[in-house]
Length: 162
Image (tube, rainbow, N blue to C red; front, side, top):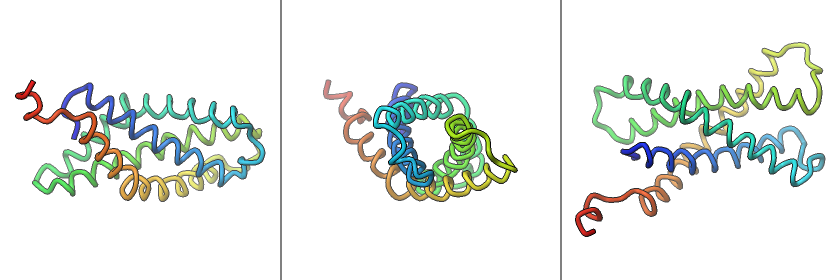
């Protein structure tokens, strides 16, 4: 989809915005935070999560996930398989990292009251991974690709006209 660094930035910003928005709401629901957090507190959590996610997407998880996905799909010309592989690798990496972030934020807000950090992490990661993968493949992926190709990506024929 994106072919230039600028296009990759736009694509990543749109994707991170949508994914972080829905995953933040999902985690508020899971943690029964809707009645306990103020509107501004929710916005602040979203903004901080978005900043963390975009940094991870641009500098750590994104490049690593694409490298792995390209190696896994190097022997195929099937575009759908390549897109699904990149999406899955991205979700694995982002769910892993953002679950660590979410756990840290949860401990910061509610205090440390666990007997096992690893158990807490695996629980959070498992719930986030399942929802994030479905959200990415079924909802956000197609929506962001549509927005990107319709409003951002410059077609080669458009360059010739100008």
